[in-house]
Length: 340
Image 1 (tube, rainbow, N blue to C red):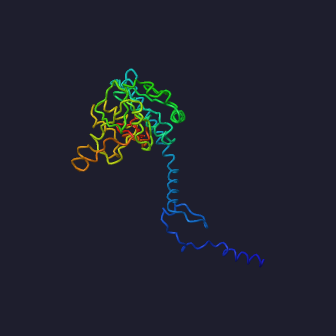
Image 2: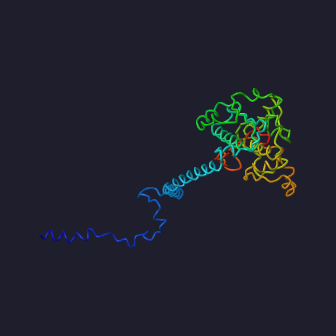
Image 3: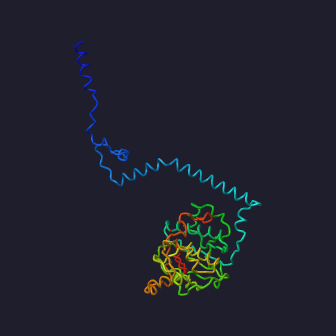
């Protein structure tokens, strides 16, 4: 009995909860309490790692919200399509949208014969540029006769793996042959920024070639040399006459393509340039640049770099299909092609 009594007297002291009144951190803010805890003995976590963990947790917490937003977006698009179909008496929505289309006889060729000069990353950029060109041509008021030549190698493999629908593309001629095997020499004009000839107008009886080379200007002058070696005409777009840019004078394949489409519609080079060139280029009318700074007059480029940068277009380089309004340059763009 005495032993039992002693145990019961000692017991309360042994289970007494620790005193937390003076424990540091008891008054920490809510934000601090939400931060991930680090186990005792572990190395302290850096601010960068902590920020990354917080962002990851926020991402996970918002997963359901993102899912709901996607569902709502799909429902909204479905409803819009239904309304468009109902607004058209014959149900042919596409015909109604494109009823004012007047196809051009001008042939526009993307020369894909530089496949072995590009790494896979740049091949993917070229693929996106081609997607953009296709989408722009499909919705243009004056679509051109679009050709992809020398199609094969890495480019074809990448398209097969990432864009299998390309085999069903319409209003485009995709050929494995070189453009010189498909078009008469006297009809060809290679667009290259290294050409001394400046394009004044477009001849719809001609076939204009844009070099499908995304090389970040590693092969400067290559397309001009190729055009000269084949004995075909060459020219550059009149960029310097209308535009002064703060950035590198580099245009993507799709930029050149879109500028030509825009010129076919408006007949105005300046309007075409300023409609298509991305804002980040810092483009201003050439005469304004000269007036504001006389020294700029001598700095105006005679052409522009023709190395591709992987840029996309006036909207988003991640969204290749402008059919939803939605990246590189060709080193052959005498229209200052180079894109992304």
